[in-house]
Image 1 (cartoon, rainbow, N blue to C red):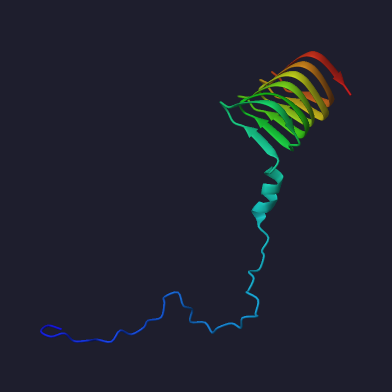
Image 2: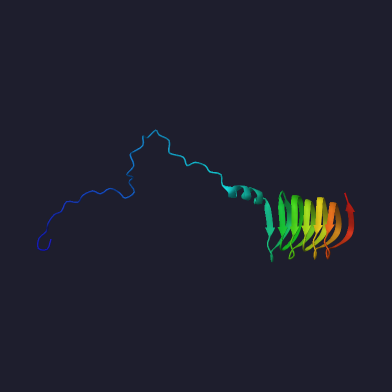
Length: 150
């Protein structure tokens, strides 16, 4: 090439993505990976219907069909058909709740109907109309208003 024009023949190359495996017949089904149970899927199903209102957030409206509501922030709502309600130390819930179980560390104001167990933690405050299946109030927990067992 230095002094003259040499012609070199270009050689075709194989694409780098071409497989070195033998070709599979066109009518053969592609290999399916084995489905292994994912341990996280159970947790995702359990937590799929959990609503968490984070600290510093606020939500208002009507909430239905959740399995668990965790109020770390402020919730002004009507909540129906929820199995468990947790109001954390920083949480405030104002409104109407129908639930199986309630665990109040923070503040609840309104109408609270608990079919099974109401737990008012130390520092927790419940005010309003309350009915419950069973109740536990830790030392320092406060409850006021109209209170009656089912």
